[in-house]
Length: 297
Image (cartoon, rainbow, N blue to C red):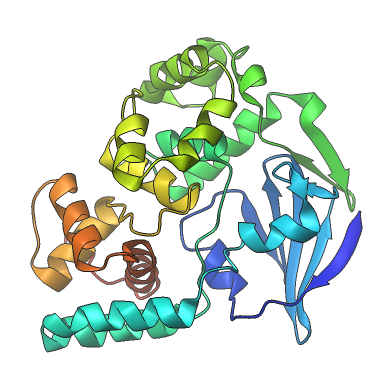
């Protein structure tokens, strides 16, 4: 294991960043956040000097960890400028929208959009369809545990790295069914069989947001919601505005906006361009934390 201290130039709040629904393989134990980032086990802890990083490897997502950890955590994003632009966009809305949004942004001051592995994000967000965050985490962990060779033992605990596409191609439909993946099984089986190499996902990073979404949606199981999540959390397309049932309720409560996922998504992208993703995450976290916008029984 290697250890070093990361000293970010800007603010980052690990609690907000790692527990806002954008990532599924992180757990907090005491002061430490422990997670598996594709093929690397990471422990992160905030202290007065910065962020203490402990890693099972010198590489992260195929690059030198000392260089890539900042990119993974979204430390290149200027949060002060991003929030300022969002607040400027909010001036054309009514007082309640501005007040709620300002509170949400204030509580999300250190929330950053992660840059995660595209293949893992595609799989996990296909799993997210009509699913809860705890179940997505469980399915992702169990999928990883299908491969004993992916086990990493660290500090008397065992972790399993996410399977490669080549490994995934060898998974049977029966094995996926046993993981309670249900109606999503055919989608994943087709994704694994139709994709030649993981280089396909890397090449998509050069596409403009609209073209990227269109390409992602060619795959079974990827609609506007899943595609937008992958755009935002894997490719860093910060204009993306993912809409799930939570965000749909938020937008109805705050903007009296109803309609299709595409309609709500387009409203968010257009109204808060180019940082709809940061606004969406701030609202998602605020409403979820304060249990607002829930349907009354």
